[in-house]
Length: 454
Image (cartoon, one colour):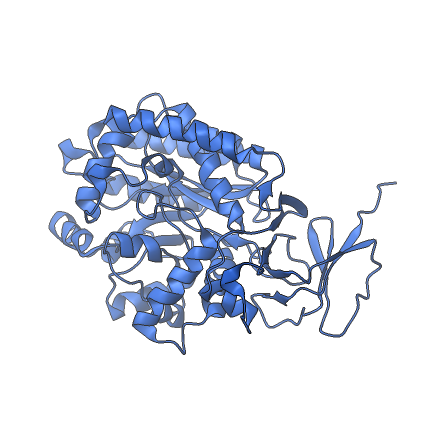
């Protein structure tokens, strides 16, 4: 007979954020890869307990979920030629660097970015990889292998660019592929890695980079393929006013109208940034129940604008949080991103509406809804055992009365323990099997190499 898995009571946390209305003030019980019980204030578990862990030094949250990133960009943080530029000039400079990506760089960058995210409390990472120079056609396969070594949950998108400079697009021709090659590889990756199971460790989505880097035909065919294979769709949209002007000039349509023209206006789609929408467009997005990856740090760094999160939520959109690529954020820290969201969004909506609980909700349950992974992002019976434990013994937290608020406003930046799928993968702030120092040394060497090739 199969051996029963032990049940573990995470007992008496200093504070707990469930991302819902459930009372779990005295902790929760894990068995295998599931949460089987929430223990209310003053109560003890009804389940049989094999062991307990004293969590009185911890604030517990669901594992955070990052909905948009570009892992390869960790190799080009703070590159001098890209500093202090808005989006389009920033991209045009960096494409000249990114065309030199190779397999070793992709593997190292994927591991480093994902480990950064995990160490900040992230249990499910998302990446948008769309640069495929010659010889790097298997970039997504490399990412899958890199993530297996970390035991991290992920939604990886097969990005694409097919409209190069010679055809009026933004990227150089050296990093684009043909529509046929992109569609064939997209289907191959779905068949190889995607299980149509929202609890699976690896999921695949399809993600043409943006309206200014792919053909209209590719946008339409990608939507058809996603529907046929039942996978999600992702792209950048409405990040800057420059993008609006580009779409109006090239397609005689605003970006959202163009997206609708291509068959993307549905609940299969989530958009990165989503800043420059009219009120009518926000209603259309909400009616379609589309997802939005809110990227506050990137939007501030590139001076792109402020995502209208509350308006989007009120209209019916699913809003999650994202750090975006490390060339437009320069770190991959999800708990710090929650703080950035709080500060930025208060400028637009005020202190009453934008609370620590709201932005932590974006980073957890909101992001899970964007990925359509409904057993992630909250602490409840039956949910996956993905959770983060933060210590609040640093000087910055001394004197804090509300530890959930303190986690965000006082600036937590590193998790002490991280559980994914019922397994502790970060303990005492370190990954159980990855040497962070050795990884960083190798990654820094590769970053220096690619920056010298520009």
